[in-house]
Length: 367
Image 1 (cartoon, rainbow, N blue to C red):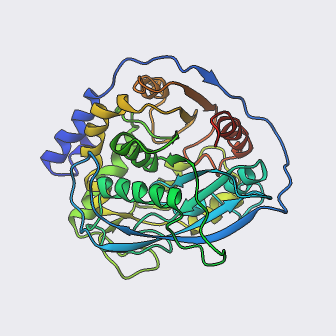
Image 2: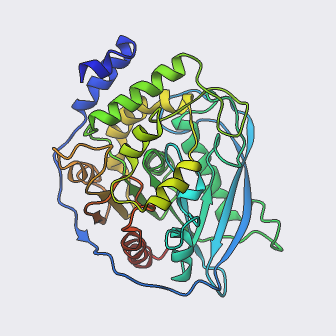
Image 3: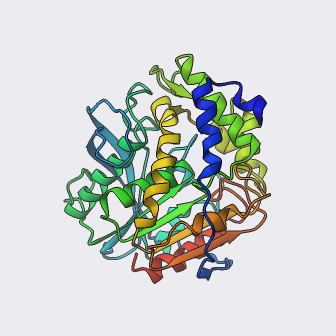
């Protein structure tokens, strides 16, 4: 481990080492959902382009700097057949991805949002600030706190119908809003939940605050910091600088993300890979420390999804139990386990099991 930490300044090395102090005793999860194989009808699912005007400010509980400017977040509203539901779930991608993580269609069978819509659940998928079709500011302009604040703004706009849906007469309003985040998107979802208390259900997918990261994850994060200290790279498809690659080579990235993946899916996903804003990366440790003080205040039902062969978390610790044990104020913690699968759970071969388990959780919580 020392060879990894030595690649970054001493202050960063000390912060990385301090992560080991964040673990707390685990509490047993109260539920376990097993996946089921199914082939739901899809012909009536509607995908509607939407966009949100947001201010890249930071009013969350995570202290970090952002530029305070106004930007556009691009997204998709995925609706089932029939009347628009009264509830919607906002899905947040993690490092190296964009909204395609949740509606992957390059290979049949992996469109998570489409499958949930066929079961009656509405979803909003977004490219976070700095990714995909959303505004691409310099990578140092945003941070974990401001990214969570943007989620809060989007949630409020969904409740009021105060967003753009050009193909509809008016933007739908929603009485209930859930929030689900994958990987670092799971951390953003947690920060939004404990900072604003404005959601009805929370899903944390493949994220942990308990310092149980693998050597590969520490190495990739150290490389991120090194890239950012050197000014970073231009974002994929953009000339805007200040971005870094989590896993500098495709092989390093794939080792972190995949365990049981179809070759065609892996190839297509690698072709869509993005970089990540340096300001977000540099504020992650501060956010983890803030999480340790605040996630016990989250008081909504939580689904915690974890894979059994995740390259980002060490298999020498029951990291999912440690994380679930931090949600002490949630009225219900649902444990969704995917044995043998990797970090990119919507793209692994067990994707139908994830879709089925999340459908059950969404239904149980009125989402």
